[in-house]
Length: 271
Image (tube, rainbow, N blue to C red):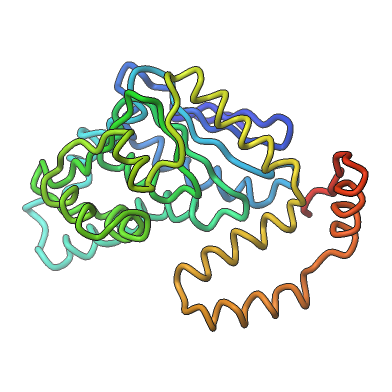
């Protein structure tokens, strides 16, 4: 399928989404919000996709939400306030859906971040399974700098990924959170020298994930997300029920034989 806000390539079981409007620092305009969640709906129905990589072109990963589009979303002063606020709430939920689609995608989603990642870009990155960065990367919770509370997921997901005090500092100051600090505090898993080495590194990780049993990867993401949102005991009950009904004897045998023979297993796609 063709999209106007991003480029999409699928090869070797890896779907690569590239933000490709570097002239505007990959700002997220109306087309992005109209298309993005639907892309992930497509992935959930595409048996060929086993892992997703989100990357970008240009100096910066993304400037966040396009300010012109943001202004167009603001309620009119001519409309009765309660009704205007109801419309605003529903629109925020619509925007949130773009990044909830990442979290709810049945396959892992990896972010490759270079340069600046502002505002809604941090919402996007925090929704991904794993984040990688180049040395020049930095993250800014930009909303506080324009008098807003971040509302698309950063304040809900990022506190589970970095220490509480650091999270509050970033949310309250809107300062730059550089790649090395993000790596040291766990938000970023690895830092690469430049954009090219970042893309190669992330694609290597994606290739390793794509080589695993897609059913086991699906179950692992399901369990990790469930455990994040529930107690340990509830999580243990869930994995017991999951494996009782979803464990693939075929995949286990293939994996065991490959391990013993030092070969590579070939797993069937998801349906």
